[in-house]
Length: 466
Image 1 (tube, rainbow, N blue to C red):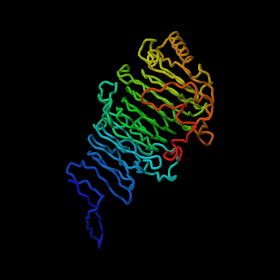
Image 2 (cartoon, rainbow, N blue to C red):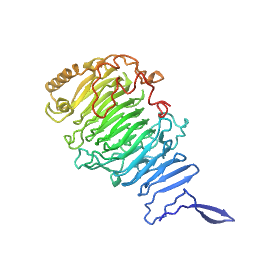
Image 3 (tube, rainbow, N blue to C red):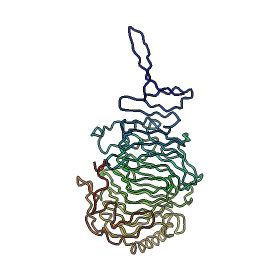
Image 4 (tube, one colour):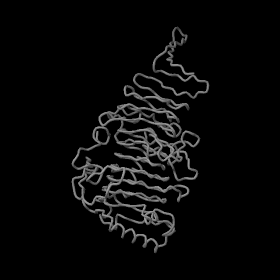
């Protein structure tokens, strides 16, 4: 049984008396099994402590600031609604003390912000007025969505990265590619990435087997201590994603992710960050099915510059995928495709040969030496002989020669290192040689994530363009 109580201890004449009064919001868990979720009020702030029951079917209102204490779950069968303009903050802490919001398999989140009234997830220390540095990372955890779509591991259900394996609510995977975990629109996730173990940080927004029934649009991950976004299997379709100033990869997929993406922006900190894209197929077994590889149109990826030594994208572990009508700029290295053992062995190169890895009708500028030979590489592993590597590279070169990519044409994007940043292109080849759009994508007449004839869709709701 739960009671809503506020206990006031008063010390008078050396004696302590306790007075109890009822309030609307203050909740103290007094269940015998200790599983009830606490909502502890302090002024305009409500701290959520999940002892096992999850949030329940509840609305987080915009007139309060909500604090996540450690892991807070929305359990199977529950729906968490978050009003536009709501601020949710995570407490600091590493390991078992890390804070995160986890939408468990069978639960839903309905978080619909607007362009003028976004939902913001950030650190407890962030007053949204400069109390933390703009690129501070790892101050809390992140947001994790878990669903029942297919993954390609054995077994077909796993525990998500970032959550201890002893927590059963961390399981994801199943057989329903149309699974619906809810709606997220106009949401900014800032300063996350708590470490829960050696080389194991929480991503800004993690998708574990999320199905195509879920709506994900207009999301920003800013200054996360690990990846901006990571997909573990699933089929979810996404539009208008921003990954900015994250420490590891901007976008990362594996375990058979087969969704669609459009209008993605990746921006690396000039002094931090790894790849703009890390695209794997499977963990164990590496040839597990369904095969992984999203199809992405209209991405804009902005790297760290020539001196950083980083890559635009890596395809490995039998990973595939397709990128069309996109812009890639300002990075030391281009795209590498992993070749393992032999030309016929399971690998991303084999996916390329089978027509399941395509890079077409894109723009590359200030990447490598601004030549196709420098940008598109076979990444041969140790067991590959020199002859097979040469054959694979020649086959890739032949494909690229007819793939309608434009190399060394300036799209007119202003890089962050200049002291300002503008991702809207003004230069060459923006509307030329467009790949045709297929079902599920918005048909536009430009390359990259931004229409050169329109306003910046990221203004007003992101930290990147505040």
